[in-house]
Amino acid sequence: MQSLKSRVLYHVVKYQLAKLAQRNLPLPDYRLAREAAALRMFRMPAGVSVEAAEVGACPGEWLRPERAQGQGVILYLHGGAYTGGSCITHRAAAARLALAARRSVFNLAYRLAPEHPFPAALDDALVAYHGLRVAHTGAPIALAGDSAGGGLALAVAVRLREQGAESPAALALMSPWTDLALTHETHTSKAAVDPYFPTSERLRLAARHYAGSADLTHPLVSPHYAELHALAPALIHVGEREALLDDSLRLAQRLQAQGSSVSVKVFPGMWHVWQMLGGWMPEADASLQELGAFLALRLG
Image 1: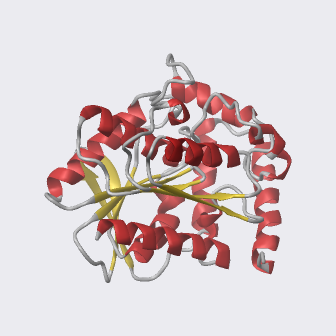
Image 2: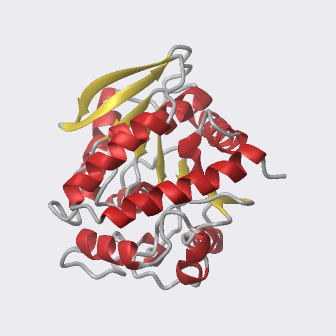
């Protein structure tokens, strides 16, 4: 049964995001507004240190739980429709994932569109992944991400397979955006209940900004169209009330059909990347705990 806290917070989030959209801020101001809101709304957990760092010359930050176990680490790729989001906006959720997995997380500050269109974000994520491989020789590396970051994590895994590079140990994906061509039914049918994407306008603009001169169905732009065989085991969490629901469901179907190991869980009443509200409501904490346990198991 959905918690009372999540029922209330759903309406709070929907109201706050509608207010922000009405301001029609230029993109730089919108990014700053989202960071300010994140600092107010998203609770950093105790027991995790934050250390600015570079991996493979890519900036980001290490989120290190006090009681980390094992040698494996996690590369976290934040959401924000490829045009927004930052280490600040996603720090709290990534830190809670680090605690749940009992592993250090590198929260990557990849380049954003439209200033840096595809393949900039993919290139940064690949450089960071290979940098982690060098810095942690022999240790397993897992990928985690939400929304655009979830799609980017999948694109990284596909590209690594194409390169013949060592595969990540696991993929933990929260509401991944995998079809930038926006062809799925829920892109429109769920819009009315989605606090983040009540219309497809923002997604369409962000998709065009990110793709740049590339086709929206390019398999590394929209990994829904990629060959998905021989990928790392994946766990996908998605909400019932979100326009990107079909991105997760179709992804799980295609992974399974092509022989890759995948499990998908739809959370009733939840909206896009509700995990950001960890510490506020049990559904967010439960999802992060499950994802963390999955990563811990795969990282050994």
